[in-house]
Length: 216
Ligand SMILES: [Cu+2]
Image: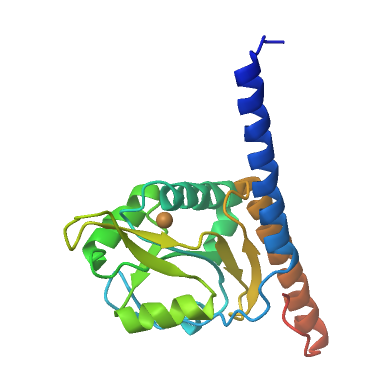
């Protein structure tokens, strides 16, 4: 084992404590998953089309909120989303990955399109008027706020925002929230499981014609 000095040990302990707190917070977050989430939005996709979850009926949706100037959280989240798509293979066709910008002032549709395409061209960028973005964020219990450094120019700001990835089922219902930093493999496994469940329910419905509750 590598020798660590007293300072190094303290730093290591601090890192461990920090890590476990983070892990705990994440666990808590998924344990008491927000049940009051209203999985609705009315936004514009990067082609300027008004879009609601209804437009993706029959598809699972993987959603995250952020902004393109984000220094770390969004690039990490979108990289993970791209990994999920890749690892789902052909199943990814049943999924619509969505990135919602909470910074419509700077994230024009063009900026947004280039940004999401950089991670994976399948990721759909969306935003809208400040009022519509705010309503969508409220629905998903996402908070965001502009942060200016002292003396910064008007368009020079960061946006603190809630992180995480939301999964909606093919009927548009809220299925699950994955906390920031959830390994893509975990997301892939859950999405795969839900897709299989949904396919089973659909097949059963097809043969029996019995109305079943959609999978959550
Ligand atoms: Cu971000």
